[in-house]
Length: 228
Image (cartoon, rainbow, N blue to C red; front, side):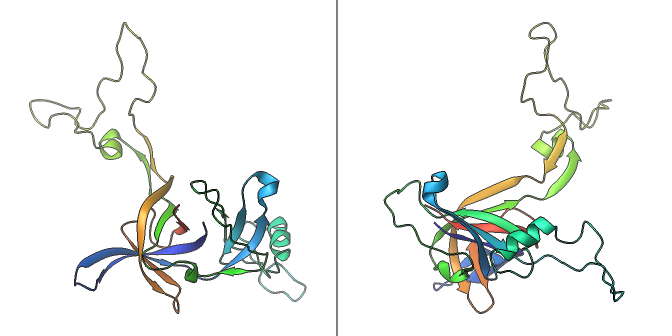
C-alpha cells in the first residue's frame, strides 16, 4: 500500500469511452517528499511519513523586514524535523502511510528512503482507493439537521416544531440512555470513504480524478491511499 497527500479541488463530470457520464472528485496532489521512514521491525509495520506544501519561516531580522506573526510560522521543532529530510521549510501537512498490507502479509513491501518523492504516478486508472478527509463543520446544530428527525407538527397549536421531544423514561430507568440522539456538534470529523476508483490521472498537472464523492470542503486536505 502507498498513498499521497492532496487537496480536494471540487467535483465535476467526465465521459467514458462508451459515452457514460461519470461524476468525479478532482484531487490536486503535487509531489510529496518522504520525511520519515519507519521499518517494520521497529513498530511492527512498515510506513512512511509524507509531507504536503510548505509553512512560512519569516521572522524578524536586523534589516527591518516584515516578520510573520508568531503562531502563523513554523515552529523550531518542525523546522528541525524537516531539515533531517533535506527540506528548506517544514510541510504544511504530514501524514503517515502504511506500506505493508494487513490483508496480504506476504505481499512485497515497497522500499523508500528519506528524501524520495511520491507522485500521482504511483496510481493507475482502475485502482481502487480510499480517501481520508475532514468533513465540513456545521457548528452546534439541533436534531432536525443533525440526524434528520422530522420534528413536531406545524399546526394545531404546537409550539415545539424542531425540538427533540421526550428523551427518557421517568420511573425506569430514570435517566437518559447513553447514545441518545441530541443536539450537538455536527460535522468537522475525520471520515474515510472506501471503494473509490481512479478514473483518470493527469501527471502534468498532478491531478487525480476519483469516481464518487470525498469528505470535506473545497481546498480541504485529503489522503488518498491504495485499498488492500
